[in-house]
Image 1 (tube, rainbow, N blue to C red):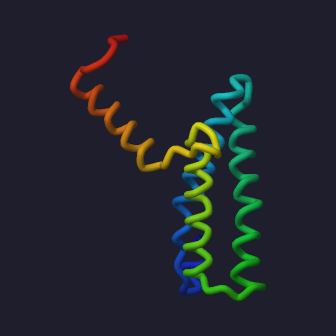
Image 2: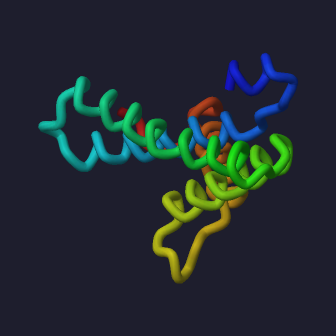
Length: 117
């Protein structure tokens, strides 16, 4: 991201890539209780090591504009995150509805509604 901004471009994809990576690594940690934190960090770095060269190729070799590349990558990773958050790819629960459910749960917690621990 820093290199793109220094060269005068704009990178809109960072947020969705970080969000996708954070959720994927977090879900992997939740599914594998014996996974070490070091391995989780290496997994996140590995995802970045795969994604960044693909974006660089789209920018350098294919000569797409940085704005178009960043916007496309942002949408791809936003969609991938939405699929990960869904119950299944066939009946994908839109990300907006999932976020609304989380917000409702947060409001219930703040009001003291629901089961007590």
